[in-house]
Length: 241
Image (tube, rainbow, N blue to C red; front, top):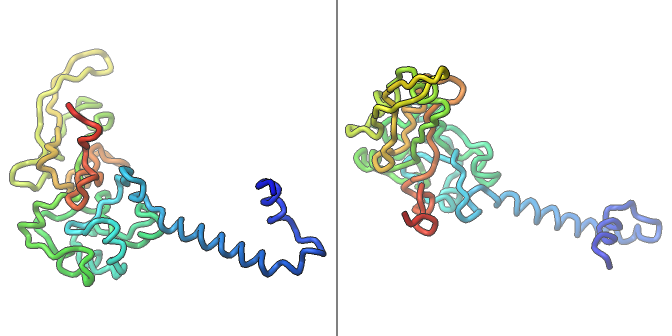
């Protein structure tokens, strides 16, 4: 039977002669819905090979994503102990399968450099227990400067907030004199921020304290996270420079 005709017949009102077949139709329809629902639940952003959700920044010590989703029971203990309220429940960052699991929202808080409380309270080891020294070396993401919004780059205004706020003893952000052009065409030298990708751990303090309102001029994404060797800024199969 032609597939279009089959679909049309399937969803059209039953004729008098076919009403006795409603049982089988309902069973088939339920099966299709169930299968589709199951696929939808499983279809989270990390199922697509090299496709990773930049907003899915998990707490430090989190295990790889598939294992994390299996272990996390959404108890909220890590959220309760976070001193900056950075750990929040996901909406759809991890798909329906990851709903209400913990994610670090650097717009709301930041991962305190001298804190490891979330690594101590997880009852299922979805988040590994870490010493403070271990936790301070874990990368949960990476900071990126948005030059179209950064005050020195875009508006020739003096600003060093992200540099000053970086909590690492050896700063992951440095400033460099950069020449930018004003709207009138004048050349102005400003100190502009740069991120050291090797040092940055993605704590989000720079983003959280950025003075640019609505969307910060420096953003944290999940790329570079320690728990996933594939979710890195550069991959050897695409880059050979």
